[in-house]
Image 1 (cartoon, rainbow, N blue to C red):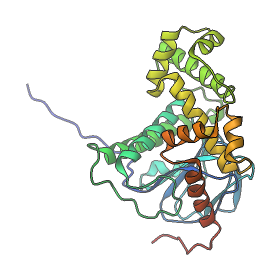
Image 2 (tube, rainbow, N blue to C red; image 1 turned 90 degrees about the vertical axis):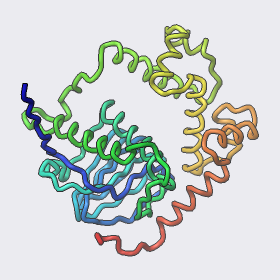
Image 3 (tube, rainbow, N blue to C red; image 1 turned 135 degrees about the vertical axis):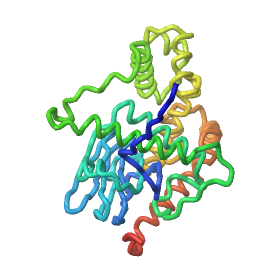
Image 4 (cartoon, rainbow, N blue to C red; image 1 turned 45 degrees about the horizontal axis):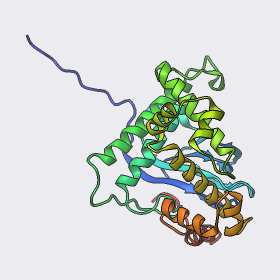
Length: 312
């Protein structure tokens, strides 16, 4: 038998990565703006922000993703009351498909968010330094990294863009009315629903203490099933997951600057400020004071005059 292979046609190619950030901004943060000759998108993971895109101004809420085409001047600022979390990635692509994304603001779904999470995770393996410096202009790969980390980031980004294009480019149906395509089995959907429901429950109890027994009772779920779902979805036990949620809430309260550390500790149900500080450092690698200083330093830089950051 004679075999003849086929070549793959690359319909969407992302050839360079210029920035990859996960920001936890202060509620007062403001980035004055820039333009450059490559693509950028900003996705709201938490809270809301106001952005400028050319001469247009938009409000983005959790789950929104906005695309800035090459050479479009853009800026972003928090709304003064909510401390937002943002994913910002910039890259170059000359593929014709990218024309679809000009002036687009789309909605993410579970599948898109899972791809974004993979990108952020892989960035931690691939890139030197922190992912939350808005003034970083040069990416530096780590000298030691897992095999093909950079390639995975490229593949996930390309998959994300192709997914959005397939989902939203059919103009016969308004994008906001399109049902999500079934990407998972029925069991996986059920597990996801349970996971999201329990996470919402935990979010309502951040000011107190919960046990696995009370979580199971209040959510009508067995202990072993609950632990299995959380291990599969997050890689953590449920109590560890809850502890991390508390620390994320503490970080947001610190960035909002409305409470001191003792008040934050009490609000989140910690038995003492010392225990709160130990838990905070265990999760973040920084004390609350170190975290506040780090974030404030970023915010202070945002108010300084910036050099022209047009394309090189």
